[in-house]
Length: 223
Image 1 (spheres, rainbow, N blue to C red):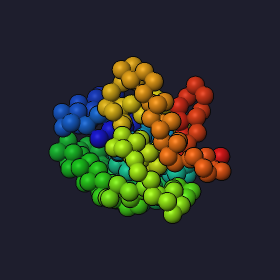
Image 2 (image 1 turned 45 degrees about the vertical axis):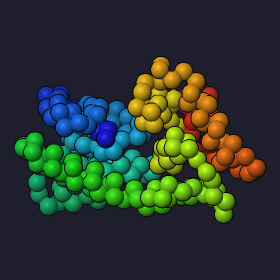
Image 3 (image 1 turned 90 degrees about the horizontal axis):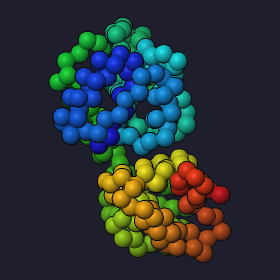
């Protein structure tokens, strides 16, 4: 599970990062709202931990912008304010839970587990993009009415694309998420598997869904 912590107090960010990494999470950090929007948009995370008071863009603005772009990653909001109005503002902005400062790491950890668990359960729902459909429970895939037979890695790659539609995914991102390796160790294997997928998903269809963004990576979007 990959988590992004957006917190301008570097000691607090380091405290959260160290604790979550000890529990097996992969944790990235950002220290202002603009960086939070950029990283949250470019990398597929399983959870965002977001401070409200941030330089450049506050946490509420960051969450609103991510939600408006279609990002549905669960958000745990950190706030020093505990009034009802403040909590409601955070939830209305699109966050899924909140935790007031100061907090015990055990409570933060429990809330993280709950949000991640709920997110995983929700991922059992069918995924749809254009006329492409995926059932994460049975691992079946259809383009229109035609069922498509995929290998395990082809399925994993397509699932990553379908969970991040209209988002350009770099080769390095794909290697980390699908193969759990850095891109350097895979040379052109990402391109090979994308071509495999294209032959099964796009061949014979006027609308090509798997597209190359030169110099950046791949994206699932309607042409």
